[in-house]
Image (cartoon, rainbow, N blue to C red; front, top):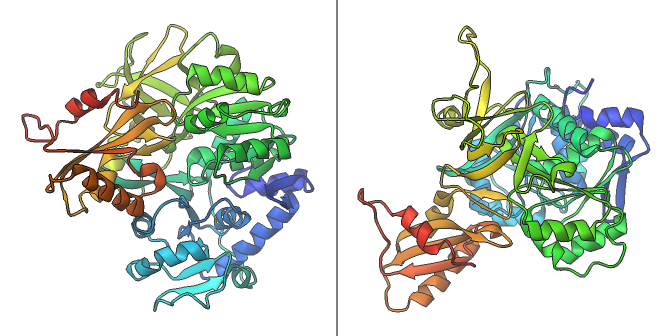
Length: 529
């Protein structure tokens, strides 16, 4: 029985040891090799005195070492914290300090950017570099810096600690929150394993699949490409790309059968000139992270004529929530579908009662995929994780559900349709972003008096980030905008940098003296159209 995250690999290694598990460029590992490597790295973690529940930060692009570190952490009873490789040093610092990371696994380029901040990470004891030794890295008093090869050769005679139950926490995935800095969503082993089983079930994954992993592994949707592949013993092709054409070449080269992406990438792929038969190997494609336009959906079905489209909706707090099956795509235009296996989705009013047909209410997800809440954030957890509606009053410890913050409605046949977000979160390129997270950086610029960021509809990005600011320099507003853009590019991940910065003499305010975001949303809603 698959209980722990690393069991996904070890059980496939027992069934099909010689099946290819991972491919990265010309390098491949079969399931037996992958399992053996994970066992070795788990021992190496024990040699570094890693203990049950301790957090290991993995700040890498999609590499073999990234995958080994994640599942070896699981094997050793520790907790892996995948950190998006495009994040800048201050954001990595926040994550590392928020969950008290003890070990960071990264590469030479990233550690040099992070190096000035290492002294501010009091719980950090070790940095492991996957592509270099430590000879040209300045040391920090409390931090050891070692190479991956030296780390992988560490030995320990005593058995490594292991997770004891499926309820043990296995991972922390950081996601932007409506109140500013990213929050860590705590996933149990059972969340990860059952999530893989649920998605593999409705996608009908088998050991013959070749899945192209183009999404960040720090993104629950990206991590799912690994876990669903491992659950069925399929091949997962790790792939970081610069251009959409690189993705197309990878599809052809590896004869990919399964492809997951977010709307901006689908839009870029639709604009390419696909060679004849390029998409014939693809059995299915999935979309999440925003609505896929009907124009792009039609084009993708032409480019991949044998592929079934799966349109999905998910929450990091509950993995995936709904999917629209391929046979319903043409009949239920615009629908999010129904609950995935092992989940129940409700549409409720503010008082917790269920909404009527076609009545808008908040989407609530319940069931065993609901995560363990936010790391070290009791108040934020209590806001989002609440007793599931409809339970008998006699239950002393009621089941918790995730209240999504999304307004949806259900038709007479039970299919769900998105209406709106009920908070100020923006969604661009598949990422949920807090306005406060960007505004904090904007306010660091010496010329900015006031700032607001809003998400504006955009054909490719879903929403584009528009920054509207007031400056203490009114002489040349264009120079202020250029200076502020450079500031953002230095401090923010690329996907968080505003698409456009508008400098105004003053920002509108409501009766309470706060920036009138509703007015800004109305005024600029067609800005990119």
